[in-house]
Length: 166
Length: 324
Image (cartoon, rainbow over all chains, first blue to last red; front, side):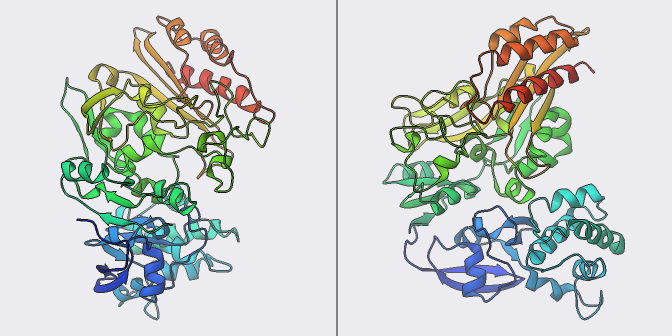
C-alpha cells in the first residue's frame, strides 16, 4: 500500500517511548527528530551521509539519521543522545552515561558540535565490543568527522569507557 | 528531495508490481539513492522499500553448492561474520575500508553493486554532462584526478565499489527478477562503460531487481587479496583498488583473477594478463610483467597519471601476496 506523498501519521519508538509524528514520506529521520520531536542533539551538518554529526542508533546499530527516512523506521527502536542519560542511573555523575563521562574525563572535544554523533558511535561499539581496542574505536568513529581534530582524545575516551564498564 | 509516496511490501511480487507503475524506485539502504534525490539527480514519484521482504537477507553456504548472499544483506554482516570470514576472507578485506561503519550498516549488497559513480560533474546538479544527456564529458579536459585511466568511452567515470572487484575475482554471478522473468548473469556483465545510447553504467532493466549473489564452490578454494589506495586512511573511495585471486596448487597459480576498481568505468580486467600467469610461481618478475601488461593500454588524463604508477604497484603487491 502506497502512503503519501502528503504528510501521514507515523508511529516511532524513540528513546524507549512510543511517539506519533505527522510527516511526509520524504522527511528524514534527522529532520523528524529535530523538528517534530524537538530532539536537537543530533546535528544537521552535511545532510548527505558524510560527516556523522547526525549519528543515531537504530536497532542497536549506528546509522546516519540524515540518510534514513523516518517512515522506514516504523517498528524500529531509535536512540538519540538525549536518551542516554535515562539508563545512566547509578553510573557516573549528574546522570551522565559512562561514555559521556569518559568524554569529559578525556577532554574529548573542543567545539563539541560533532560530540553527540561521536558518542552514539561509541555507545553502539561498546554494545557489540565491550572492551574495544584503540583500533576498534578508531574504526567505529571513522565516519564521524571532527574538524577541531580532537580525535586522539575521542579515541582515548572510547577505550577508557570500555575499561570502566568491565 | 522531491515529494514521493512510499510502500514497504512484504512480498517480492508486490514490490515488482509497484516498481512497474510510474517512476517508482527501489529503496534498500538508501545511502546512494537518497543522496541522488537530495542532489536532484533522481526524482522518483514512489519509493518501494525492499527491506520488509522476507528471504532476501543473509547468506548460506551448502558445501559443494557455493556461497549464496541475499541482495538485502547489510554490508556490515558480510564484514563481521566470523564463519564467512573463513569461507571467503576477501569479503571482509574489501569491506573493512569501504565507506564508514554507519554506511556499511545501512547499505546492502545489492545497493552496493548498483551504486552510481562519484564523478563530481555527474554529481553536480547544475552540470549536464554526457552521462546525464548532455553533449560532452567535462572530466576529459577538466578536473580529472579521480577519473578513468583506461577503458573509458564517452564518459570518464570510474567504478566505485570495493565489494565488486572482490566478488568478480571469485567469479560471482547474480540472480535477477523482473517483469520479463528471472535471469542469471555473471556479475561482471552487470557493468558497462557508458557509450552511445547506453548512458548508464549498469545493464539492469527497468523494474528489475537483483535478488542474490552466488559464488561458485570452485572459486572458494582460491586465495585472495584486496588492496585499496586512498587519499587518506579512512572514509574514502578508492583511487585505485585491486582484487587478486588464484588457486595455489603446489606452488603455482591456477585460475588467476585480477580485477581493478577506480581505474575504468567498469571493474577492469585484462584476460590475457591473467592467462599469462597460469602455472606461474608468481615470482616478482612475473607479477611485475603482468602489472605492466594490464596497464599498458592506459591513457591517463591531465591529472591522473599517478593512477598508472599506483595501479601497477598495487597489482604487483596483490599478486605477490598470493604466494607469501
